[in-house]
Length: 268
Image (cartoon, rainbow, N blue to C red; front, side):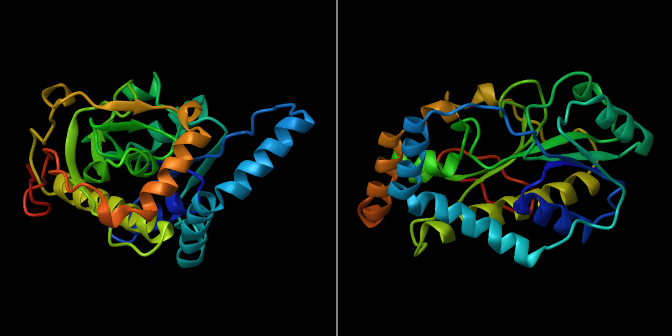
């Protein structure tokens, strides 16, 4: 079964999984907008930010439009919509379906008692960033560009735990986005790669016997964890500057990754 957010890229992932495997049900988390009172200065500041960094916002908007057009509907399976993935409704709905595998993407941080939910194989999560090197949000690819860490752009499939993108790794792989013509194309490359990596991981788990790949992140060099409050105008400006100059970006060696048998080659 699938636990996911309600964005079009999550709908696309669900459709791709349902096209290859039997999906018992889907829990879709649509978070209730946080109530906030902004004064006039804050409103104009936000408008100015959107105008100044239009390229960044537009790239993500185009990505979601692409997936909404390509995958306009959720799979025809039992669906539960919740405001919080950690609700009692999620727990009861999921337990009643007795899934072999829970596939997670784009939700809030999973907490107890969901972390202890029984599934034949387990609970796995997609992180559209390269763990343990780049974690958090709002977008790990954007953080990599802002810091000129092009060699750290990639995706991770991991076993879920209580931390932020910190579970034991099933597989990781890098994505070279420097040849993309636009920022939208770069994000599309990363997201399409993420979906493919997830599908390959599911295939690996369903066609293998335990013990499955489960690599502790503590065995890798310590990475960075980013938070939305850190995504300032300075960082956005750095992203745009580095994107324009990507052809001159330093060619750093890709980090160590965890490969799936027969799929993605390990880089070091």
